[in-house]
Length: 117
View (tube, rainbow, N blue to C red):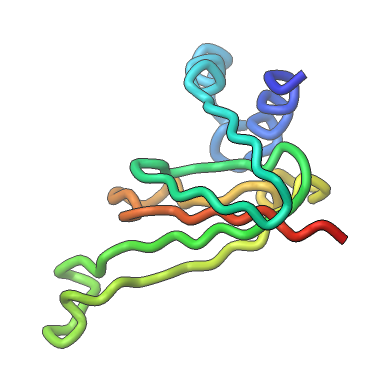
């Protein structure tokens, strides 16, 4: 069932939906599923893309400012982007986080499952 959901998200995603079947198969094959309880957090490194298969939460992508993006005063600072995601989103963009267009990977991604209602 998880693999079916992974393929469904990839088929609706703006980048992955344009790939050949073999490429999508390769992406799905290396997918790692983490289960988080309500309010639980997970820190990931070396990850460019994630998807919410069930539930909702937020992801904080934290990256060090690169030479071209920073002023001399900001060189040691970090840049943070927060994304709210949900498996209930109609399009894949609302259930995913990460930026596949950027060359550099975020320093780390902090994922937090939404608190239960």
